Image (cartoon, rainbow, N blue to C red; front, top):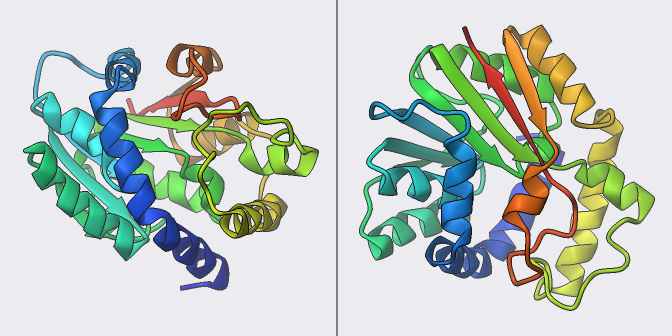
Length: 242
């Protein structure tokens, strides 16, 4: 594993337990329904879907799809996160599969999935163009990649997280871990162009025939400033394989 990936995995290993608890609360919160509503903007509603949650963390998106009866799989580079995902799926009484795997090089046969989903992952990938090409191969014809992310590296460079509200998703992160998060962001910024414009270019080059961007998702998901509130505005990119 290259050094930056090892650093990212090590960082998230330290956050796995607290992250698990927060995602369980989010699953029980109305945010669950809001995320489902966002997915329903892009996915077929008339059949069971094979879904891959890339960078699943402790499994939240996989759980959202599993609760709707879909065939859900989650992968993550960090073993501690996958351990917590496997634990949580039992707590919630759902069925989903989880595996430790590099999202840039997912080990599945071509055309294995109808839907690929991911949240706050692609900003951490040092070889994003390669990842998008691999993800295109994984989708069945007619499939869709739904990517929720933000230009986190640019936000750190610009100091946009300097004036945080009293309550937000990062409130209880240990200061040393937050310093490490910012250091990782600054290192990764060397690999990236402004987003989501850069993503659209890379996705088209990877073969996706139709790519849409929604900047309004941020206000729909994070309408309140609560423990789930993300201080950095997220976007949705939906990319279709025709």
